[in-house]
Structures are given as C-alpha cells and as structure tokens.
Length: 360
Image (cartoon, rainbow, N blue to C red; front, side, top):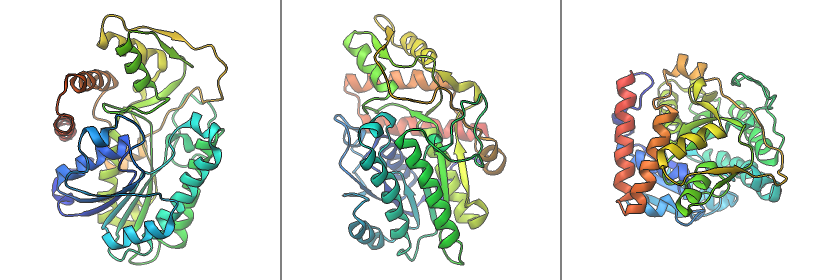
C-alpha cells in the first residue's frame, strides 16, 4: 500500500546504517531487524549512559562496527566489504547548543563525514538506494508561521543548522555529479522534525530533561517555553525513510530528491504545551519554571510542509502528539520498572506499523 512500509520488501535486504548506536539509529535497527533485513551499523560508541543501543540489546542479530565516519579508509573498507543494497546515513553531531561549543567538530562530522559516506558509497557495486538524513533546521529560518517546503533556501544561524544546510548542498552536488548515471544508486535526502520517543537520554533535549526532572521531583528549567517545533514520535520519520527507500528502489531518479517528514500542522506546538501534557501524563510533583540565564540564539518558530510526501509518497503522520507523549511516559515508566526494553520497543514498532497500515 502506498505510504506504508512493505515488510516483504525488506526481507533479506542488506542495509548499511551509519549512526546505529544513537537514539534514532537504535530504533531503526530494531525495525529493520523485525522486517528481516540484514543490517550492518557503523558509528561511534553509544553517546549516552544509559543508551537505548545497550538497553534494548540492539546489536543482537546485526553486524556492528564502532568507528568514525571521518576516517575515510576505514569507512570505505567497512561499507565495501558489506556491499549493501541500501545505505541510510544518520551519523551526525545532532545538537544546536553543542555546535556553539564545538563548531569544528560539528562541521567536520556533519559535512566531511557525510562527504566520506557518499564517497565510500561509490565503491559499492550492489548499492541501489541512498537515504541521507539531515534535519528540518537546514532551512534559512525566517520565523514564518507556515511550514518550509523542500524548495526553500538552505541556511542556518548556528553551526549545527548551517552544517546540515551544507550537507544538503553536498548531497545535491553528488547526485548531479555522480549518482545520475545509469546504474548509479538513487540518492535522496530526508528532513525530519523534532524527534521524540522512549529511550532518549541525550543531553540538552527537552523530553529527556523533563523526564529526569520529574523523576528527581524538581522543577524543569526551560529556556524558551514559547518556542514552536514540529514534534513527532521517532517512528514517524523512520517510517518515512523506509517508504522513501522503497520508492527509490522501485523508481530510481523519480524520487531522488529532498523530502520533508514532519507532523501534522496542529502538532507543531510550543514547548510550554509539551510541558503541560507531560506533567498531566506524569502526575503529582511534575512542575517547570523558566530558565532566565543568557542563552545562545535558537529559532523561535519552525514548521515543515509535508505536502510533497503526502501527495507523492502517500506518507503521512500516524500518531498524534497526544498519543506520542503518553507513549513516552508509559515507555519510560516501563524501563524504570525493569521491563525488557527490546521487547517493549518491538511491541511499539508493531503497534505503530498496524496503525500505519490501518490509516491506509
């Protein structure tokens, strides 16, 4: 069905995934394993402790290599030896505020690392599909009240956003220069919103900060409660990436473009709204207060226009933000009680796929 993930397509496909030890990468590996794909991951060690990669035993049933995408010879050998059918590039320095402290690392990882991934991909004879994951922050932010479309100008006030805009330009250059020839892989980029879900323990992210404060019985300190972001459950864009990869396999250059995978318009909500709903889900003792300390610049208003993905891929969001927030609290409470994290994640993937199919 258009807009849904096709289990039969992925069975036996060889998928090379960078960034597999991170929050999004761990969820994607679990989904690919459930679909029957053969997965090899290439990334640095898990970036947090605890980490979903370890809690959910993500490395079971896959090949995992811990190395840096900035190491071109090692990356090339790793990818070429696996000789994948599909490449999904997700490894990155993903934090805006860290990019102010570590701009050189941010650009070297996000730009040169992505260049290395695309260059290594040229050595893989069986490769047919490349999905390069960037971010909604690659757009030149005008603080508009409407969503950004795929043909809007690239930009970025901070080093992180700018680095991802550079990656989009790099992707377009490699597509036009190397991946347009007959037999070359079909290369697309994917821009997702603010991804949230169970198992995210990253520093300086809203949901982990909220859950940690609630656990400790203290008020959450919030930098910018009026900031509006395109919040979405982690499985939403991952499903979009998989649908996109299927179309690239089937139709090649027709889908070798940039794509937005964001939430419904009504789910682009202020931080304060998220806090209120999370506090309701958590219950007694959940409070927050503004953080009045000086902060580096961050965009106030950011939305994605997903009309193209709806119309052309048939993809659209499945879970509302209300559903997402209640599932996050339920997931986190299950982890604290000692639930089997791998099984909980697989159960959530099953539920999402069923709801995704039911919508179509």
